[in-house]
Image 1 (cartoon, rainbow, N blue to C red):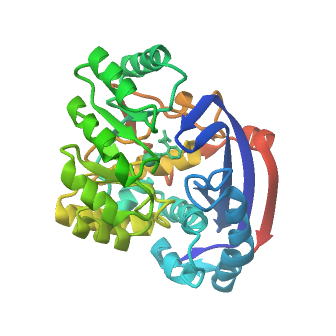
Image 2: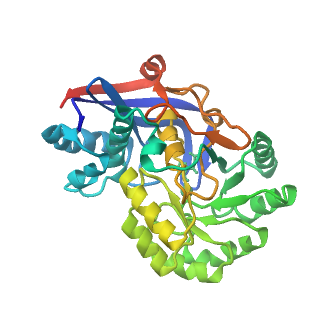
Length: 370
Ligand code: OSB
Ligand code: MG
């Protein structure tokens, strides 16, 4: 039995080394909400993947702070113990929606749970890898030469797959240029829901460039439209934003809306739900990979552990710490070794908070006795 005696929340702001531009906006600073749960002298950490504004999803760090403080904290307070973190989604289900807020608290419980057993988290989750293949997500650039320079430097770093962010007006041209320059590279694209069904002819042109997948071309509620688009494309569709639960993953696969799934534990409401998607995908032989949300070392570590599961068979959006941050709030930083990230072997997430840097980048924090 795991005791939970205290909970803390920290809002942090970490400058990104370079602006990250997607079809939905530009980020210069990573805003993160961190959760710690402690009991019996052990502390576990979770990171909420919601962004500064409601662009990728309806949640933000502020909505998550409110939901955790006012609604999830009292639920934990009524309990104060758990046998297994997979109990939490049931308890939290009285709160409708807010998957990223719920996932952040559950993530802290998983770290606490693994630390209490003195086991690295991947072992607790049933992971099978000692290092995971790293891919990189490349934002929208101001011009083709600067894009080519970025892609070249990431390939030289050893990244196994390069994902180009696209949007209407920045699609066929950059993809053609990157493909011509790097004929052998594993390439994919991510539209972050920027296209409409009428844009099918543009997306169809992308079939010529041997892409591994097209990620989330259409709107996040548009499963049927994705299924129809999929019929007209040779390139597999991968869904990100649309997959908000294991049930939705099942629906998408039944409809033929995607052939690959990007798993983000925060987007689907936590590790337990991500494990349910993993079981579904294994049974149906659907390839998975772990997506990213520019996480700090805490969220990045969780992604690394999750990506050790057998169904995560494609390179992940998990890059080295230095791809985004000069200094992170957790140690040690993640580094690339032959295009892979070694999985931490110490207990829990296997990274430790650097209190100095956490407090320096922290804009707000609060602690409660549960
Ligand atoms: O759509 O996968 C996405 C970052 C923020 C929000 C959404 C996405 C992304 C990325 C970056 O593509 C992935 C990463 O390196 O963390
Ligand atoms: Mg995406």
